[in-house]
Image (cartoon, rainbow, N blue to C red):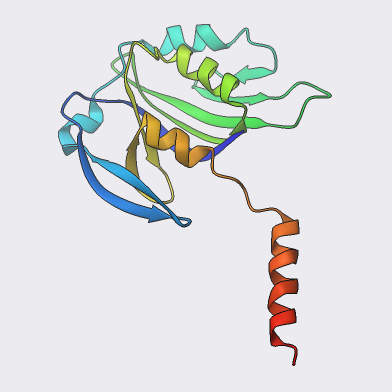
Length: 162
């Protein structure tokens, strides 16, 4: 299961490897994007992306580009929320957040033109760009669960006892 809060862009050929950063104890290679290239659109027009996803089961999309896509009843719960943005009728970027299985994420990216269109991902909170491989590694990180927190708390309490 991937979980993320990101903006998806078409990756310009001029994107270059940049600094290595640490996030949640893991290191990731970022990308440097010359600022004028951030406005490079996808090769897909806005309307064709909306048409590609509007008939998917459990996908709700508005003409303004806002969408929500949810898991089916009885399946493990997941949900994607986001917005498609355009300029001059072409898809410019996609804001998306949530969690979903890898297969569903790939299906969503396919509607954007992937894999023919290389992608890059801007992590919203961290304000860095990652290539697809680094993003997938980051999005697949294990979410801490309450058991881990309880175990860590118990171990810390035990360590303080005489």
